[in-house]
Image 1 (cartoon, rainbow, N blue to C red):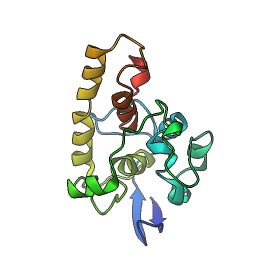
Image 2 (image 1 turned 60 degrees about the vertical axis):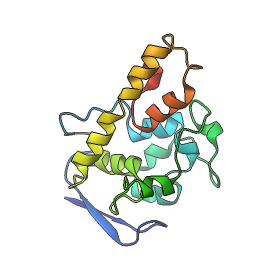
Image 3 (image 1 turned 120 degrees about the horizontal axis):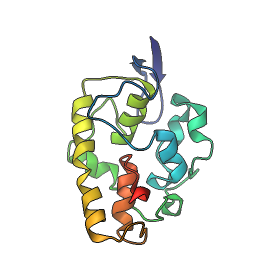
Length: 166
């Protein structure tokens, strides 16, 4: 069992264990369409999500990643639109738990790497609830019309749904 020790701007001396092989043995009802590496290469969160904690994750996740060195740049997002709410809003809605202070994507990256935690069911439930946006895009857009509902499509990418497929 490998231990990951985290010390970055949002967590100091936090640690977790990798209990599963990377990218394997997900919960049966959790089937993301994109890996963290794919999400980063497509452009998510304006390129400003994991910049100060890259050392925690595999180096190859950042090869070809669309990252901004200083400020959020929505031009780096696949659909070139801002589809994120500020972290402050997530905190106010109690969507953030202390083990993953950056939110769902941080949880997903750690889950993908093999961590399992008591927050997994809650996060998977949130991911499953987001699928409603797939239906909205399919209902309101012509197939592969990526100019239609760009914000919703970008948000789907943030949740590991590949909105380029419909």
